[in-house]
Image (tube, rainbow, N blue to C red):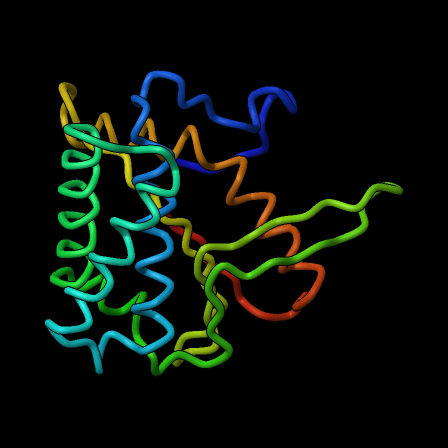
Length: 183
């Protein structure tokens, strides 16, 4: 599917009310864990590191108010997300410590039409061919529809966010090739 500008500013922000009470805390914990992996570099990651980051994610979930069965379920989702990222060829590439100019949870601000907008990019780096990548992590799960339908819907819902990030980086690096993706 192609990525184009949103029809309206209201459509630029996806709604998540259907995702359940643990969705945002799980997303926050997985993002934090992937940041830790990327800072170390997946090439140097160990099983001990994974155990330590699971404890870290559990603390984050508790700090966000989860307890009981909801905490157990959320922690299981976090663990699965981490394991899948570490086992995935794309995840390993994204979390590699070998990329140039790599950033995680990268805060950026730009002035646009008299207003300052603030953005935080989950992961960005320059690959070996000189392309700047913008990676936006998503922890949603595929339930029900076919996988392709789910992925198309995720691209449609999150394209406006990726477009905003690309505009920010285009102002910073106007000549650099730029690619964006959901992971």
